[in-house]
Image (cartoon, rainbow, N blue to C red; front, side):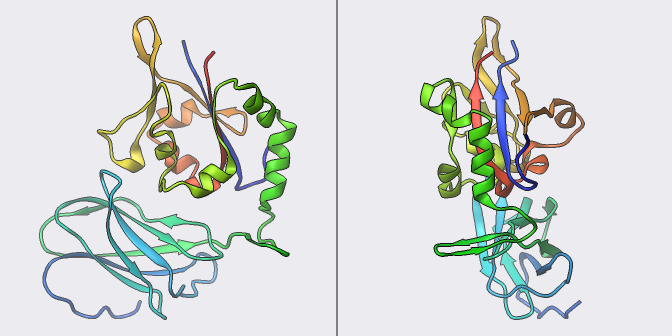
Length: 237
């Protein structure tokens, strides 16, 4: 039984337009944040500019028209990430900044379920408790109790500061993210998994191996956005 749409478990196994107001000259990203289907502007959402390293270099709140303006520190590659209560986290494509000027981007967010104690609100059928029940049925918590691998539980992921899925593996034993790549393009390897050195892990999402998708130029953070990750399991063999 797979997890509900939008809630996923990531498992690794060792392989042996509105006019824009003028601003002072400089580098910036401006845009509009709106709902994906209705295009209604989203007010008071948090919008961050994320650098190649994963550092948040600029943040802003959207206004009543969904407008935001992020001032950037210099040339480079950036991604705009938007979060708003009641919506799934969304992000832009990679933005290349060279010389002074402003880039214009449009970011859309989809509704997400909201859990409030004593009140159940559902959207698109993505109810979190159902996902946790599915993890139990698949033996995830049993393996956690037996200590058969390394695990990130739903609560740990919800409390994480990670902005992209690959960042969830930062600091995990024997797992080495590719820190030289942009944070949104990072891959992961197992450290000293074989006598010949590090190896590339097999990666499964909801029980399906996605290695071929990754080999096609896609990235883990694109295939499984972090707001869709329910649990992570890392094991050998």
